[in-house]
Image (cartoon, rainbow, N blue to C red):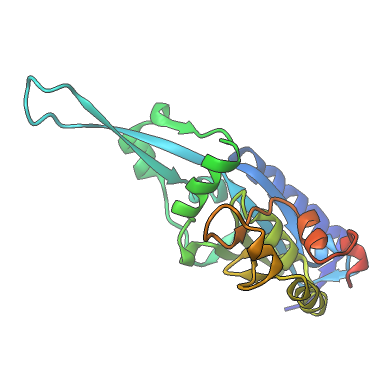
Length: 235
């Protein structure tokens, strides 16, 4: 697939993130666009879609029993991606959520605010979008030229890791992983974790959970014992 100039790719990426922003807690450009490469082969975006509560009144088994309301946590990823025009989704496929909205009504689709470190962290881990839905691949067009789009989903507790990994490049990531390992850390399943038997593990007083809350890239450089390196200097 042919590459496109950086200025064109930047405009496309900016437009996509602007359309997604109302439906995301956070959405950022990654990949070679973020690294400011002169020519770009694809557009990579990292997004933390907003969460919603879906309320459903359960039927009463006994007319004298009090009514019950079931509250279901739902990530309407498709609501976020449906706003992107002229995009043909390849993976994992586009699923229309209009039936869900029609069933429950827009008035019961209530955005969940950021709930703070503890509770939001637990919600994110409990329902992490599904392994097959963390990566959305699609195509859009610049004139007659197809442009690849990759959207990677993250939560508040691992956004920094996904943003860092998807910014790249691969060689830079490999060197950073080596530095992280030397300090007792590594990446695992999209999270920053401390290694078994390492000093960070010995200092972990919160139990057996090896994951580190990583909202931004700054923490990755800090754990690697380095100062922050701008994306344009990682090429």
